[in-house]
Image (tube, rainbow, N blue to C red; front, side, top):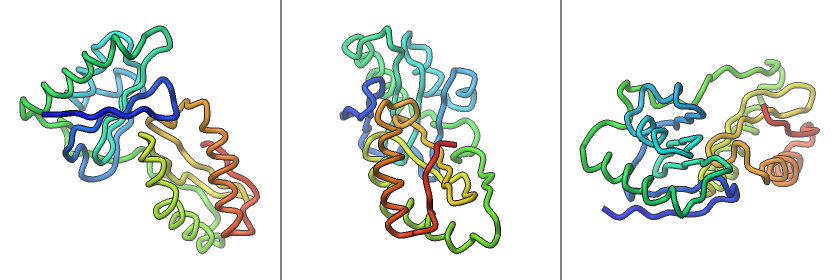
Length: 186
């Protein structure tokens, strides 16, 4: 088994590509070891000293490290853990709940058309680019012209995530939807 790695815009996160489907539906974001109780692989990755976050996407695993650790020390252990997991045949999740996070959204029903367009733009233009960087972005809400989005994986805590939200995503949404006044992290 050959696992490719890619850097992400977040220097604390690397993207690992095992060459097979990681999650068929949705994604999973584990920000602390307590969150990883349902995933043998996430638990194993958190057992490596210096791992502070694990994210499962459709065909990749993003791993975030603590500031004190160096990738040249962590990367071999992470690659070995991922390879061992896949070769063992164990499931990624002990429970069949490949979901993102809470699906609670907020918006005024009169804004349903605007929200529909926001979601379509997220799915078709924004999420594929963010996934390419080892993360994900989801719609959380819309109120008074402000779009609220949740960033996960490599995007959570990334130094450039504010610029991505403010300059990239906000400009795109404003271009297609004049009612959008701004974008905020949820």
